[in-house]
Image (cartoon, rainbow, N blue to C red; front, side, top):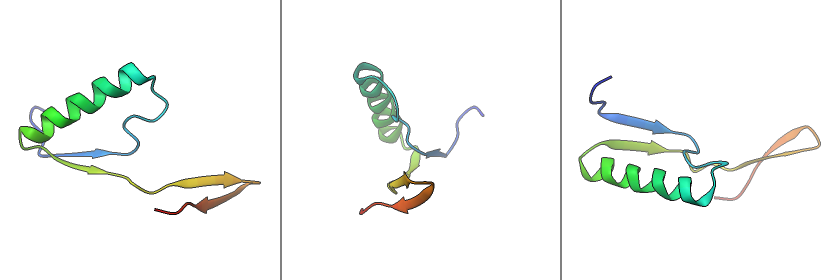
Length: 57
């Protein structure tokens, strides 16, 4: 992939330290400014006693 048109991102900053998270967000903002379309998941799930429960949006 040389120049993708769309980026699918599921928790792109999950489990990152603050510095790395900020670097990734800055990179994503730059790519978006260059015209890249991004699809980012906003759904929250929680595993409780072996059952997956959806959190409020």
